[in-house]
Length: 239
Image 1: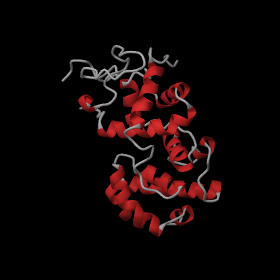
Image 2: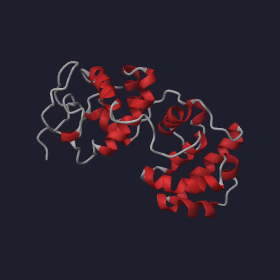
Image 3: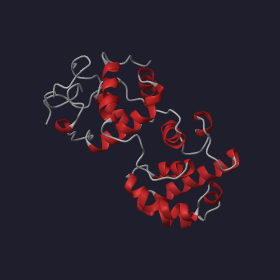
């Protein structure tokens, strides 16, 4: 059973959208020119940084510009190209399998629906939502570890189940904001709301975030700060 959203979640979500909009572009940091490149880059981004992926994908896509090309690639050659991203043997298997599925199921094109996208090996709802939003400009709320952490710390949800978070946040946020909010939460999680050492003193959300470790800046315009969020992994007074 999915727990209901914490009290005041919708107001905090609206403020989060407003504040993060001023800080970050609604864009993935993975360099890509089309949905196929984004799909492959997203698979490669597991357990590494976008910067590492961006260092290897130009040559990868120069040699294998389409799903047909990559599906027929020599795995040993692909492994050499993507080695800096880590777990390169497993990732090679995954991007080749994904490319073959694209060729066999969709004629080499990336599908445009969640239902079809999750038929591709290695593509779950998170990756599919990234591709739908950033690749096709179609609303999608991608839930990665950063989004799980921030939605709980901000008191938007009281669960760590990615699918439940996707649906709960989607229900309280306008559909046209899904993609932008997810991408901005990811960026904010990387740059400010670190898993171990959140930089609350620099955070533009610290006046209403229930998990903030610093005094509010008195910027709140809707409602007022509420107590500690359920499932928060920060506790007031911790060092």
